[in-house]
Image (cartoon, rainbow, N blue to C red):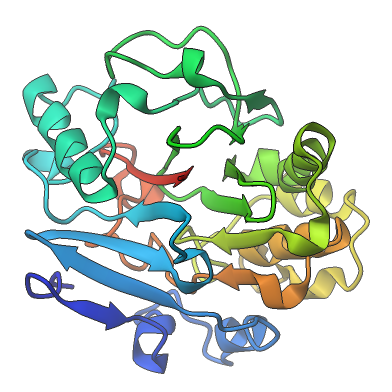
Length: 308
């Protein structure tokens, strides 16, 4: 897939874009069926100076800046081509820094202000403050968390993904935001729901006022698993587990986006306030890094959000 022309804005919710092509698609259209219940709020692809990012329409408000990044428009080469934001996978540091500078120029912030975390596929949540700003993007992170929350204006929260599910959250009435990295383990530990509760406890958010965008990540079309993953998902006690777990003649497949959506709704979010990207990072490994598609030889994209 080629990036959009410079300056272009493109809606990416057309049927041709939503349904992956190739052998990963179920012949009986199970992929389509899984998304029939989703509220199609819209995701928009934006190209600025050759850099392609994706934004959720539900979060596109004057008080919020956010982005789901892609591989397009950076300075890295080889397996890191080109907008690589992973800082510890062997890419040239000068190229990585230039990638951050380009993304931050679009977001009208500075790389030194970003809050990272050491992601460990668990359910740790960090209440971020300005003291957590990275300063030097190559600095060592001394805490572990797979979700970040804050109500401090101008503090960008960033999580990294390469198949796992990114979730960006905003509670506009109290100017609080969150960023969640939900792999299958974090999903099974209900990190999405726990982050909602923490935002309510810390900032006085009301769940019905929280907006959520579940960004590009591996889809059920490609997420084949062993029996341990469906087993852990079933322990969440969600209604209608058949909507999330598809048994095939080969291996079970799990729809992590649908699971996280259901967990958010169970915590009190309104279904109409949750946008779900239908892009699968493995199907579209030319556009996004996919750990599975590359065998781990990759960079990483990011999801970032800040409130003004």
